[in-house]
Image 1 (cartoon, rainbow, N blue to C red):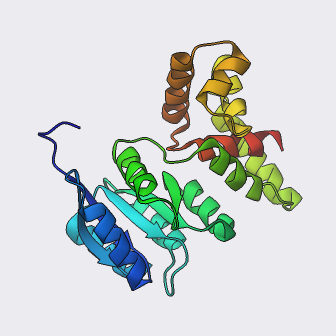
Image 2 (cartoon, rainbow, N blue to C red):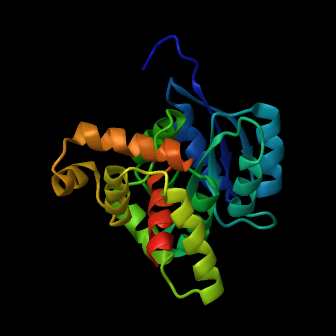
Length: 225
């Protein structure tokens, strides 16, 4: 990391004080990261973020009052919003899915190893998604349950219109992402280099105005449903 770069500013949002304390200890011990605030619910999180202007918000999904999903949606409407990294367990897939649709850039399990959490914070601070292909595939699967024909038709039309700006190769890459493949697997499927896959993924982010692989995958699933 560039020694001249200011530490990444982090706000921790969780209704469990012990979780906040543990995260503060883990994150605060890193020279390139600094915890600038904490909150116990979504409403308090909005206030702290407005005051502290963090780079990254570690956001719990389930909280009393305003939950992490609602708070994430609100943050994304603000100018220069922070990047939101969801804290979750896999029994809250539906809320995580909603948060990813709203613009969160990844999620980590609360019982993850400290290094995994630190890596995720650094990744989203640098503009990269913190979503493993396996985890992304599981969240995508949670979105594929039955929906009403009206909702399905509306989503299909909107998704197809959004995907229409892609080249054929970019669309093939997007479909591979929807299958939960990582970059090496996509490269093998499409017979291209990993570097080319990364270039295509970057193009997808820009053209589709999305911030993570799950959002790409959801668009593909909606379009082809």
